[in-house]
Image 1: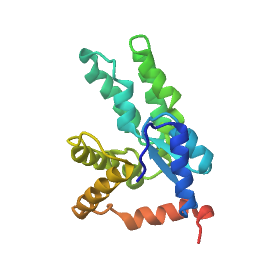
Image 2 (image 1 turned 30 degrees about the vertical axis):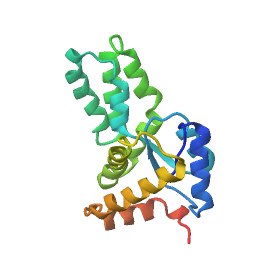
Image 3 (image 1 turned 90 degrees about the horizontal axis):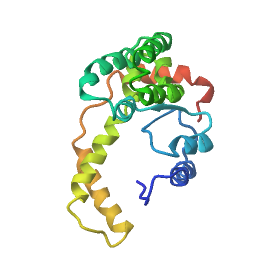
Image 4 (image 1 turned 90 degrees about the vertical axis):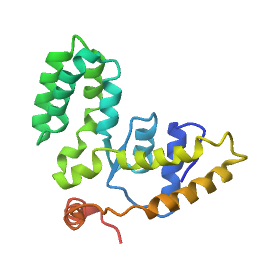
Length: 201
């Protein structure tokens, strides 16, 4: 658990280096939101790691200024991109999306094009793994529960007091987790084959 005043590249690099110092040798895939500096920090600390941007965050970010009268149709077209069976199919859907929406919502189209290298990572994986890495919703849910605990506290005397409250809250939250990752044996076997050249003792 890390506490920082702002989420900059420097902050995220300190998190990555802390993980390395604590013994993390390799990370196959990072699933991240669109926070500034996160991608750069990952590339600096774990250059072999793949990055998948959270599709849910991408949708929220890219459709922020879409008119309510267009949102339903635009979302239906976006769905053809991120629910495609393969990256080729997704790229074709992205081209169709661009042709249809470029003039009306150029910033939306640009966002998908500029981030495509980290939006398309999950297409290299089977469906069982895609479900795990396409969104950060699990950690977002944890953060939401943390916010419920901290929002009624006007201030904390120091970072340690905040850390202690969050630690105690996490113990309570984790005790209610009961659902394991579906098909974990299959997922684990596939990952071990896909990253066989990077397995460490």
